[in-house]
Length: 463
Image 1 (cartoon, helix red, strand yellow):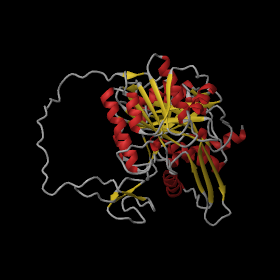
Image 2 (image 1 turned 90 degrees about the vertical axis):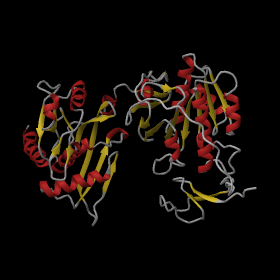
Image 3 (image 1 turned 30 degrees about the vertical axis):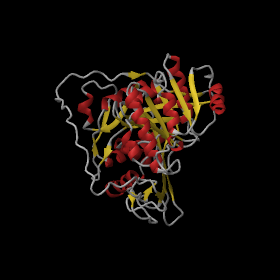
Image 4 (image 1 turned 180 degrees about the vertical axis):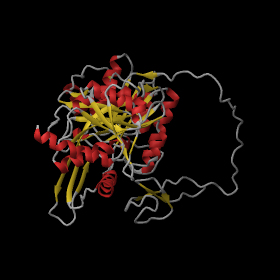
């Protein structure tokens, strides 16, 4: 018989090594290599592979049909998935512990079951009694959802394969599942990969939508091999801060819909409540008279979103000033500060700088550069920005303000919330057309924005 080999698998990136090492050569993580004796039998030296069969090739041209979908019963979740759950697809949902993943899924399961579809909820972390307590607290105790508390994947697949396959199968969580075909403990890379493959094969064969819940690491990434994210059809992250009531469901991969789409929820005592107009919610507690606050007109996927960017610039008593950023990229803050120093003459090297995106939202698009710079200059000059203005634009290293996409959608969202003007790149005036929803006051360079804020500050003091 062919002998079995011992290999070592990195629990962070999934890299396989023939010998143990203290540090993974691929991702650089320390103490992440775990022994895996299930390398499988080696091929015999004289064994030849079987003859392949001829497959039928299809032309690229042809008719296609719309992918059938199952509505989730929650408009915000349907927005993120692209219109509902695609039959036979696999969806991976990640998020911090206690952020509300199980709450979101039990509400979704109840909504799908209420529409007359079969839903099976399998938990490997909670007992059935705990799931029922959560459902009773959310007033969903009468929903026709089938429950199970099991971790062995063979038992789960045998159960759901009996009779009519369910429309939706929820696995909470994939790190607790295990299969007898792999000789390793649950939660290891090999077990996660094997159980995920088994569930995805079942989804493709039966047409069931499989939703997998994944734990996240300290840096917010889904734990386990990244190959699982490549195996599934969609990857969603449930984000939020325990200090805020807002929760953001963000799509980072979707084979059947847009990526970088978000859904906004509000956590309450009765579960998650959908927020159809998140801009009004994020700006609800805004103090327009305070310096250091600028309203950014952003885009999250196809949704325009207004959010307040807050900055505090204060002299530092330390030799190395502090730089703290919440909700934005710290590298872009460093770039904006360098441009303010080099092209605008603002010396901020001796100041502590704090930048925050209000409401717990995380912004990733470069169009927030102009709003961040306006908030920083406003705080430094102690000059409040116009209360009826929004900001958007990308700052280049030369100090120029570059145009961004979707200017018309940003302006329409600002108009709906009562804003009367936008400070934006001059290049976006052509896209807005001759009759924009609100007028654009063009900003050609960052130095022009600084001069504008400095010129208007005395006027407000006199008023």
